Length: 207
Image 1 (tube, rainbow, N blue to C red):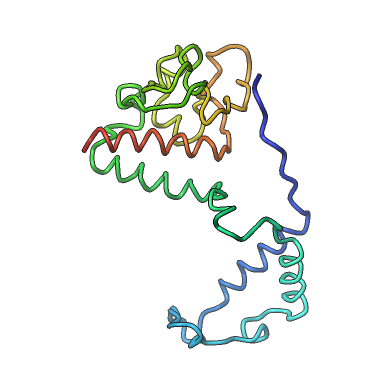
Image 2 (image 1 turned 30 degrees about the vertical axis):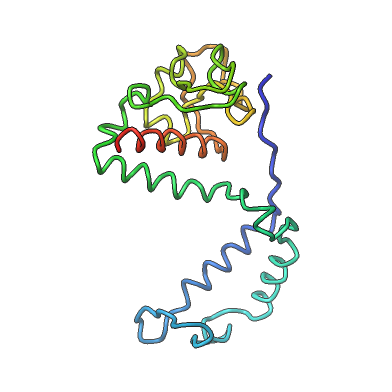
């Protein structure tokens, strides 16, 4: 049975806070217009809210709101080291760009299947019908997965079907008609890790 991602509620005032903080960075240049590069802390220049055109009371309210809304999850890396989520996208996109520049990915319109070497997966992981036992497995052999291109994968529109890390793909296809798949975008941190696994297999095969 497919599982859907949890709905994350964003506080209504959060966009206002983001705009205020973005404006703070945009206004933080010296009068001469030259970019400022800070030295080692604490030898940093300081500006008052008034100097950069801010209302001190509103800026303080934004800071207090941010502190009050901060996540209460543990800060201990031993407990929270895996909580990277969307930060993964930056690393995955960088590696994909390097692979393209090195010619490891010839075209983003190429199907991923010819590029992908088998990887060792645990029992229960893999494509439908190929999940038994811990052994090397392929991930682009099903009728649908064979059609997935690098463009689909990197834009998160692949609708890849299968199970990884003990979890099946969590989103249902848009309709029961497979011809309509690979037409929607899905923000999925697990999919970022999956793309990373594909790129890692690609880089390993090129060594």
